[in-house]
Length: 605
Image (cartoon, rainbow, N blue to C red):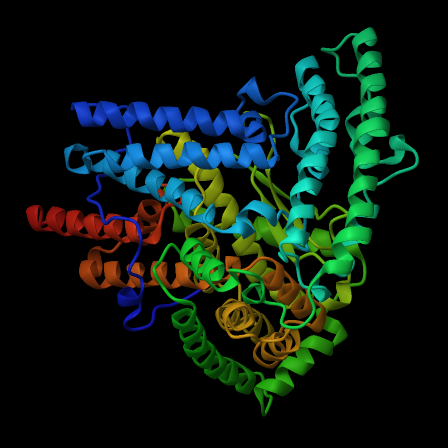
């Protein structure tokens, strides 16, 4: 979720995807040469392949081929997909990019980067056998079904029941691969996984009709479904829950407690302590940042950012009347005025703040998505030990809004002063705006739905937090410190993640570093460090992406001077959807050149 540029950062972002020329249009068919026709046909093949292998994504866009399926989690399917990805990559590499239009060249660079990353991941055993973090795993394929599935027609309900039935095979395949992870020494560190078995157990119910999985059948029968069909659906769902879902979850729980947990790792918690871990982490750094940065480069960048932000925090503390930064942070962490005790009131407060932020959107963007969003709690079974908030993308095709999910547990650890920065990151102008807009852009559906670059998506979320300054959201020293603490949080990640996974840090070292530098409460810090340990590299994407976007904004503002239009810049930044940072930089540079040429041609304007 955040911030600004440092001198020389561009030199560090030497990216693995090619620099390409770009154009302003995104027409769906631009065939003008044999190379273009070849590429467009290949792109469509890849898209259909993705839909065939991603049934829930197919459902999200209204394609019924995924009905009743959860995907194939077997080792054989993983190997087959990897070989198919390699074949696609070879064909992409044979494309003559020089013969493509500028827009197709962008397309090719983006899609090639996505496929190349799949292939690179497959070079590491970790990608084959590590299937869960402390936050979730393959059982997540069903936990979200009751609130993420369409429920309009008989076919929708039949698909839901089919997916409940399919979970038994997914679970068996997941356990088989995880059993191999145990044999290969690729287990998670022990401490961050504490409570994971409890979260599995919370999904198991003695009475299936009291479970969240029964929710689609708990209300009135839809008018489009006959009474006999409704009764049959309920009977089938009952059998699926009693004979597939709950027995499978019990098998997973028993496997985890009896086979996996006893073999979890002690000592240094980072992935470098696993076989091949150092090489795997170096890959993860490249993958999540879409750069060629090395772990130590990221670590040093983090230390630099931490020092800069810490100095700003000292100034805010002084403005608030505190002699030291530490004294102000202690006040913010402990004063009851900054905390609520009622989960419903906390949710309502966040919802009202979201509507206030909505009013700023037309001032910052010329193009807004049609899809709305809502603010809801993280489901009870997933909330303990989870992060403060996250975003779930919606779908106009399936009637699902975007959802800004808020953790309403442990409210004594969730201060109100962090909510402005949190809201602009997770909802608008952050994740909801960017991801909902991406689904509506005039780009190929593979780009709109089937590619994801964390450095762009999370970099934009972090960049959006700084837009809260222009919105006037941080109107008290507490809220200012909240924003800075969130920025420090993401800067600290660069230090902590690389410390854990490439420098042998202990969990306590990571916790102490974050407690010393951020205003986050101890419970939040503990949850975050557990996340970094079990999800190597992901946390690096935020700051690297945000710094690049701030750099590009500063570059555009300097080059265009009085002609710089912030709304046009933001629209341009987002009009390709999520893309690697090098492709983004090339695109913005071309836009700047086009704007300058337009001014030169029409000086009177």
